[in-house]
Image (cartoon, rainbow, N blue to C red):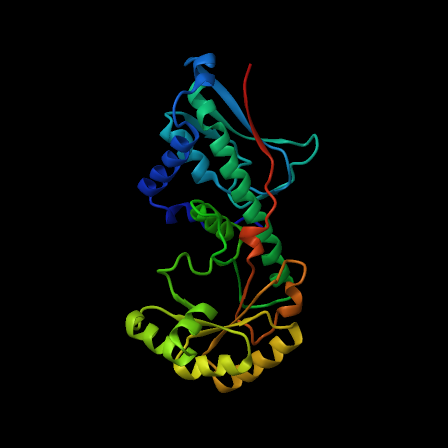
Amino acid sequence: MASPTNFEALIPKERLEQTVLQWILDDIPSFDVGGLVVGTSEKEAILWMKSPGVFAGKPFFDAVFRVLGCKIVWKAEAIEGAYLDASGSNKIALATVVGPVNKILQGERTALNTLSRCSGVASASRKAAKIAESLAWKGYTAGTRKTTPGFRIVEKYGLLVGGVATHRLDLSQMVMLKDNHIWAAGSITKAVKLAREAAGFSQKIEVECQSKEEALEAARAGADIVMLDNFEPTKLKEDAKSLKEDFPHLLIEASGGITVKTMADYLSEHVDILSQGKLTQGYSCLDYSLKISH
């Protein structure tokens, strides 16, 4: 099930190149002795995928070598969002990178790290999306803000390619009032009221709730979304149904320790969003390599 949307268009080219340039500079803070050893003659290198999963991260791989002055020729198999069964001896050639050999090797590890992690997020996300689809659930499966600092754009992009929602991208997108916000403000009602004054009509406000009573207070205060956090599946479904009866337009999110293995237990017609921190915090990386042609 390949992603039908080209999400690469979401990322401004200038921002992308600025980001990958910083990654490259972090990896070469001073001398590149290995680059001296190999020289500057033009070479070709083959990108190999060596483990099965969803191929994702093409724009970041492209940007790394574009910044370094190399060219990439992608093969037909390299479809962003496609599941590729690369395993054991069945490794798959995805691209040829052409350029000065020292430049290819300067970008090698940064490009591969990005590709392997983005594909890991997309592969985990694809599994979650397929479970929701198999149960004919109509809500949103989503990631969370539990991303790697400095690497958020890659992991959030991987969620989309895998077929799930990103949730909020950062602190400035949507308003999430969690337990610490509530305790500091004094109450859910006070926190929602002040948040609405600042957010106005253009942002949704979500409140993390530990009980149905907290969710009712949040809904009455004007929250758009309530997160039922760390609820047992049976209790979650009961409370979600009751809340929907009183507040039909309220969005209900289930979260807290939910994984691909357990998510089916939490799905219900009354739950609109199911978020999983594991999609960006506990994913397995896929195996790729870049080999210079002899």
